[in-house]
Image 1: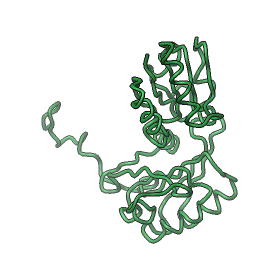
Image 2 (image 1 turned 135 degrees about the vertical axis):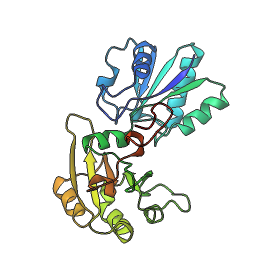
Image 3 (image 1 turned 180 degrees about the horizontal axis):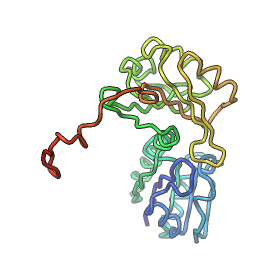
Image 4 (image 1 turned 180 degrees about the vertical axis):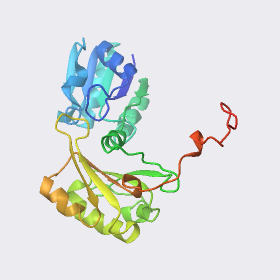
Length: 250
């Protein structure tokens, strides 16, 4: 018996790995994060038990996993996006290890990747930004030393900020000294869902644009010059003069 932590992707039921879909359709027990994972992701399953974990606390979730283990049943533990990013799987894994219950993590498409696709952007461009910072707004979560938004903003790298849209005014305030008022920024609401929506602007006006849209939650903030880079250098990989293992100079 194995607990499979499966990344269901950002919302579109087609943005799930083949392996993740196969396990969902074959595992006899499914626990899914119903507040973020659409039920369409579960289509085609033959599970004898399907549980929405949005209604459960950690101890109740672990109790279901232990019960499945005692019956020798595989479990599809379905999380949104990629479970390694803000998936709250760390505490579940800790409890499984204590009980010697085997588990496996199945990666998924991240919300950041879905937003980049929607915005038709490459998040790492030569001489614009070669670094992507994935973070969250602190809110109720304690951030480690050096990981406050103002600290990360000093790098001026492309940044994807989770769980922060309701604090957009404070986020802009912390980003402005480092990125400047003309830096492009986008806020994407429910990327890849049927009701997906987004707004793109500059740090100087994004707060007003978000307020007009009425976004309160389930939105990702992406900031950086890559969103509107103007002229930029081509990557060396496809440059005719660049030789590598698979291509000689031409």
